[in-house]
Image (cartoon, rainbow, N blue to C red; front, side, top):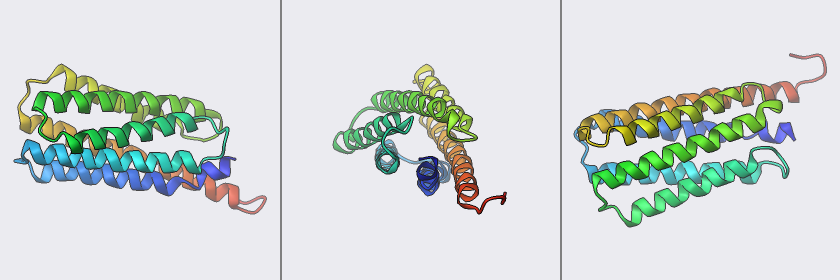
Length: 187
């Protein structure tokens, strides 16, 4: 069962790549318009949700955290769809959607990290990733009147940090997978 979870390390890498790319684009296009930011965020949330659903589907039945990961995936897909169909929402509405998504994503990541603590070394990284999301969501809610550029940079910094944490989780999963697949006495 642990081996099945560890084989999904590459899905965490894909989620991390999406997050880092989204964050990098936010920094590379500081003059990005709100409409482009809305669509870019929606695409990121959707892809992240789909990848989380794939992780949940690939995980063996009964594995701790599987339900949280599935809920995270549904949340991401729903957020991406809502954002795509209602791109004309105001900046304040976008910030509320982003903050709510980040806080809920964080809660699910924390819960999954806690559930997986007995199955995976380094599951605390999922908890840290989740806490990062919760703090980010709280900051967005606390500073809704901040300038658009600072919000874009805050979103970019969060996405890059979140992506890096996912890379660390993927590395832990891959190394555990390698150790599990190694012959007796190796590693």
